[in-house]
Amino acid sequence: MTKKDRLLKLIEYYSAGNKSEFARLLGVTPQAITTWIARDTFDTEAIYAKCVNINADWLLTGAGNMLKGENKQISVSYSPSIGTPYYDVDFIGGFSEVFNDQTALPTCNIVVPGLEKATVWCNVTGHSMEPRINHGDIIALRECTLQDVQYGEIYAVVLDTLRTIKMLRKGSTPDKLLYVPINKTDYDEQEFSISRIKKIFEVIGSISKFF
Image (cartoon, rainbow, N blue to C red; front, top):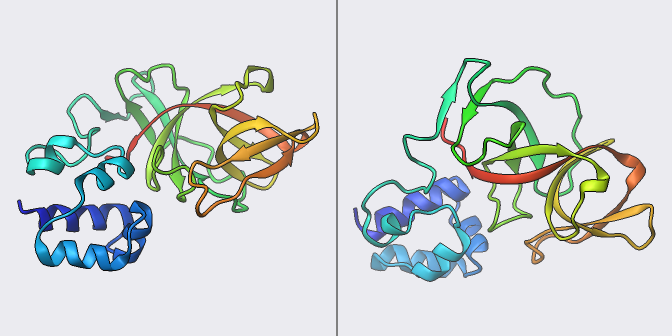
């Protein structure tokens, strides 16, 4: 597989074939992407830094699977006693209002060695937590309380009108929390009242969706 082939696969996976969107993710110009394709090359360091779930061997040589999580240990189970429930519910990597009752029953269970402490898996949409958590990933969550919150860590929070994933920090007053994105180029910090929180989950891991 040529570098051009690998680059086109990356563009399709991370931005649904949109070269400008992929350029935005990497922090390069769209013209740079066009040049890489024409010259059958790419900036390995830029891609590996932003596409954090990429298999380094695949990126360098084309050998193996494209994603780190693509291995036989990760699997889907339809037995209630095996794995952790996956709910087809979106947590927004941004600040978008959504209804909070999208689904009541899990679609399936997910088995991921090393993340057995998770109590639920959900979807991620949006780009505010890239490159650490990418659009289209699924996240492993463990429900906690406000007293458990460690400032500077990532949490998935269900507020009265939205779900969001952010780093949490102290707010300007004791009754507020500051929600901080990783991608500060395109997203701003925002404050929300603690009274709006319905549930809060520790984000203990994320992988690319494989099913």
